[in-house]
Length: 243
Length: 71
Image 1 (spheres, rainbow over the protein chains, first blue to last red):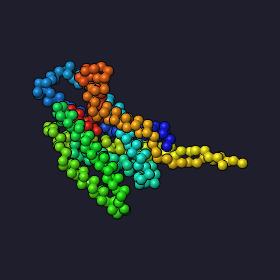
Image 2 (cartoon, rainbow over the protein chains, first blue to last red):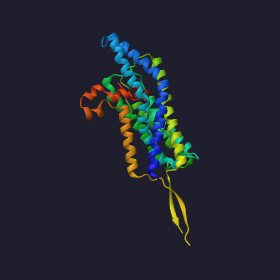
Image 3 (cartoon, each protein chain N blue to C red):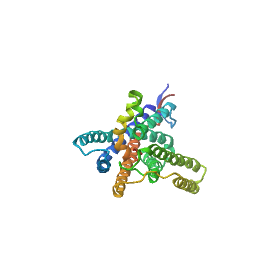
Image 4 (cartoon, helix red, strand yellow):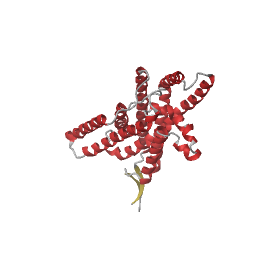
């Protein structure tokens, strides 16, 4: 393994995919965030927690610019982070992934990780815009969300290990096993404790855009890492031989 | 007479330090974007960081968009 090349392409692929994710979010998710924060502000005025003054709006504009400018940067940080995990898993799983080149293999793995580590947890604990969420429960919600990602991810890994013991057609058994396992986890895990007080059409449209954004990340990280891996082949070492 | 040639060897083994490094980047990045509520800056500026929430605000929009609980 050419370790330096491996590390560089893994981190660059993650950062580039994170940049794509941040940019997509900037285009399609930001309008919903603005709308939700607008409702949040109206609630603050109605409850008397804030006053509708020029000073309020000056402060609001200041932190909204800071928050919006962080969208792409946070995308790059998150992308590098998730990309590091993706690169590790790809390096270990490359030889058993289907596909005749590294782009196809990376896209297959990205699809599996998107499904098990994002979509399944999202169905249980979907993304919410600002105005939804009680700050008192944020730690509990973070624990629940992370736990479900871990349960789904490690569950998939466990059933994959189990699948090695089965022959061709019987490989469906561990797949069904994962389905059963995650269904049980889905019903056993506690619900999000917070009530949704924002309009449901706003929440649903926000969630749809959120899925599109995250999906853009997983497709990009698969394509980028696959392209780099195909070209630079970090798994191959060239050693001189003398006869 | 001796001849030299190159042999390409395919190796999948990843050095331990590379695994540890990538695992640390994964955990650190996830914490910064998904969960920091002033903890990182509190190491430098103390309790004030929990009120300022600079990193939380900077990652706020991505935190919501990526599905992390925010507030």
